[in-house]
Length: 360
Picture 1: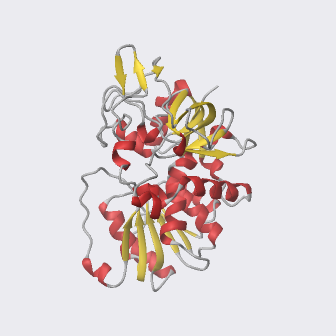
Picture 2: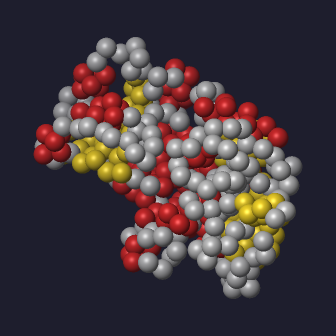
């Protein structure tokens, strides 16, 4: 539980509310640690406290609400972000931009103001991304739960619900990279390396990976990157990339979010070219770009959750995993529940690409 921003999470016993008609109770098998969880814990995301974080959960359905028809007890599920499913954006575009995304994912309570978690007489803010899965049991709307096959390593699947679908979806759904097109990825955490994996699967060439962490550059090479660069040891990154693709790359992905990286991700593009930015450095974070980059036909797109509908995109990623084209398990380091703060620290230090908390 997060009681104070910037402080370690505490392990506490809590009580769960009764299920609403459209909710399910899930026994969590594993949950990924995402950069957004860390940002919230450090106070970069407005969040009422005390709260339970965790939004890359996977587990087994224990109980379903009276109106739930899509899931039954015993189903294996991956949990993703919350969305209403009724607004024009949900119905006609992508639920990642639901009109009610903020209250459903960040406010720590149901839309009617009730909470799903209590500790004695104290209200605890759950519903973090509609789930709050840094816990052995979690309540979520059935709409947020994606049924998955039972022969998969359930405890490892949770990151498909956020970080992995963000990187993969940015390439497949937004950049729409095709075979033979060039792709450059800035930042090789789980999001960036997911983009590398799908870039390889799609046939992007050259496939360029950029990071200051040498071990992650090696991981990118192992996953299919054709060229790698460390900006800390490269005199002129833009020049070096342009030596590979003289006219500029077709697409770039920023998984860092800093002003310098976004500028570079635009500067290396051809005309026209497309940069997708998914990196997060805080809600109030100014960036400066040259308008000339955009006037030359280049695009800069902000992306949430890979523009993905989890109900269709997570099964697509699972099919790629089965085919050996999306080996996301190679990114995972597991930790026991009591090691959750160690997992967060390992992520912050860059020692673990995708920490996953597993439950007995």
